[in-house]
Image: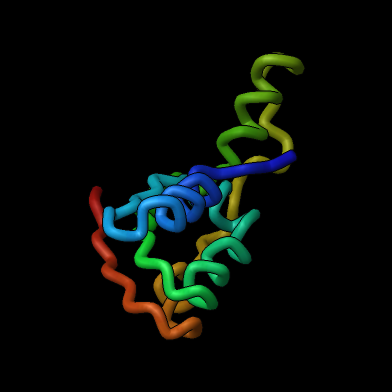
Length: 99
């Protein structure tokens, strides 16, 4: 089962609607569960999502390192424009790139 903190942020926002819920997720985890972000739009939830882009499927990379000795097969992602995805869902992205 693949799960990211976004799922917990959604549950927290529903349980505590008067508080701000923030999810810090990696680009790999977010790309696997982008439908959860759609849920935030469908049921107007004010969940904030911070996506850390490192271009990898971090959990898969870690599992390969632990079980296979760090071969890194299929762990790298193509660049995804998450801001464009958010705009398509009528969300207002704030993009900040750090070097």
